[in-house]
Image 1: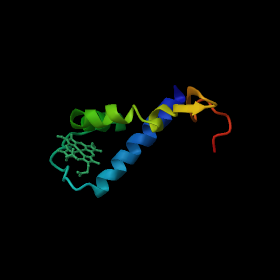
Image 2: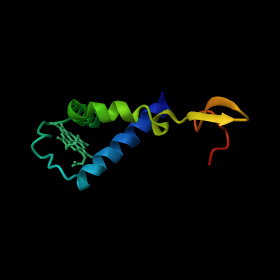
Image 3: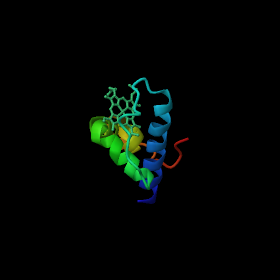
Image 4: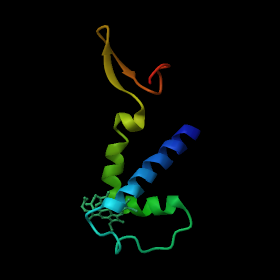
Length: 85
Ligand code: HEC
């Protein structure tokens, strides 16, 4: 659970940082007063829910992907491999 929170924070930090380079002016989109970062994220998701759903299917979110090892298909990645650097 703790790892999931850290990953979420990193993900949304990266997304928030990306608005600095955004081509679409979001000044009119983000109008509320927010007490927490999660409230801002919720605002983003009102328009970007598809991007969020797509991201959750990626190895970056799942920390694994299907790989074939010695002819056997398995889910492997950071979440279940000890030396993964
Ligand atoms: C009211 C709708 C709306 C909200 C809320 C919104 N966006 Fe967007 N965003 C758009 C639209 C429309 C585009 C341009 C089309 C596209 O790329 O989907 C866009 C594009 C982007 C892009 C791609 C770069 C660009 O400028 O085209 C990024 C990154 C982005 N938004 C990040 C965010 C983040 C982070 C938040 C929350 C802080 C957010 N957006 C909130 C509607 C919204």
